[in-house]
Length: 298
Image (cartoon, rainbow, N blue to C red):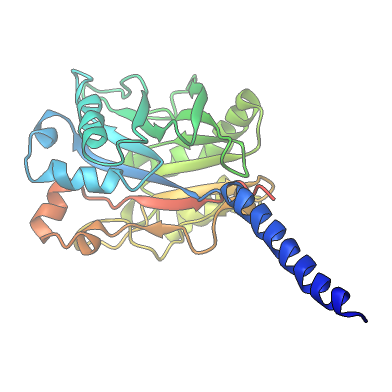
């Protein structure tokens, strides 16, 4: 090999390396999108009094700001204003470049003590494309499920729905036993099998014994997967009950898109180093959460 060839080969390798590095640099922005975090949180008796508690609201801001979608339950506010005020505080306090929007159900319940469901979601990552208030013609539910369909361009699972439910404690078995019917209806209306059941189902302890649990149609059906297991504790204080749950179907895309080991109970008292009294003032429930896989670009 001549001397000119010896010089040319390293030069070509160097130019080629620059070309490869240039391509990688251009592709940096196309790498996997980060996951998003979904939560479900029963904020015990949320309304004017809780919003005006100066110790509680800063902690609620910290908790809610963790999420990209969060189902809030037990909103008891006849004025229907304080969940909007809370979202304003959150948006003015954290992650201001990706604020929450929200959709809220009608006030639900057979008695004068009615509740609402709300979904807080960040439009930077997801958009609401449909809502459905379950038509409870047989009067099974104290607070009929409220469902929302989301679309996302940054997730591998582009379309999915969430069924939110807060059961009446004394009717937990009856209400949970009807969820397979609700699931089928929401799947049909939303046009996707990618449905998540979420919320405070009161699915444990005195409200749902192990015997009753095993008799549930949605438990006997092996197509359903309960992501929060029976041994977990979703309650603040001395109780040890798995009231709050996520449930999906095995033939949906959820199991393929939930990040491994991302389904958690968020123990905010420990994480935020709160006193027992302050933790109890926030709620008697912890949020439950999971993370969904971001879109893979190549």
